[in-house]
Length: 318
Image 1 (cartoon, helix red, strand yellow):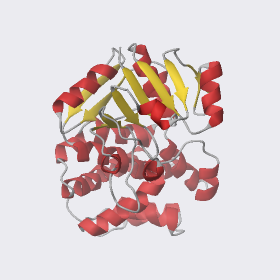
Image 2 (image 1 turned 180 degrees about the vertical axis):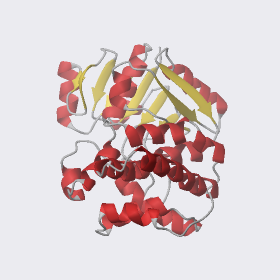
Image 3 (image 1 turned 30 degrees about the horizontal axis):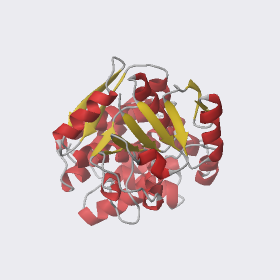
Image 4 (image 1 turned 45 degrees about the vertical axis):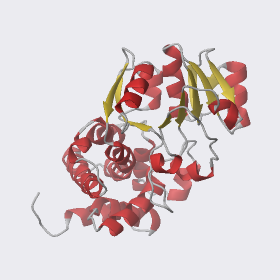
């Protein structure tokens, strides 16, 4: 049994606490929201972000960061990327695992760079499916293989298969960039464009994700794995995907502000899209899908026109 602190009690942070408690680890789950703290403390349930899933007595809530992080064998950060710079994480001796997905819009840094994480976790991991006990797999990446293996052992179970990797940048970028493609995929589904169009979108999406990743030092093959293509397929296909939902609702004529206001959780693809366009310009990488999503989200372009713009681009080789 290990003592583990999780910073962030959204759906994914809470699901990670469930997985760890099932493996008999003690978990301190931090939240800044008093109603979430009270529900976990009084009812053993996160009614706001993961309703309907009972939480083990091994999971205790906290609103103090020091309480959640001090004296732990592992600290997991599961906070939306745009809030990481304001988190004020205390210094800890334990390994830090980043479970955040995105790119900081101001600095263009990845989450592990912002918080000095020792490892990152990413994969096709829809929180509600995993919390319900459905099988899934993920990747823990670290430049230190011993750290990756330690975290792998803590999280692995017969229902949750954990792989290790040393390509931290590739694994983290896969988890961030696929959310942008998922917005486009949601719009394609909303317009009823069919499976051929959706498949083309996913494949060309992974191509531009890979181009940017390689330019930043990632390995191309990482984007063919769980944290790349695996996560992309899930996020672009599932009704549980927040980013797919954003695209689908845009296709139905709703405005972005209205869509985001209706959601409890953060659709990470929206802020990440701004950062990705900046990175693409900096790295001189062509990312046509990402650029069109940016035009829809922030420049007022019609979603259907954006999708047809991709089809009418000058012919080229694959």
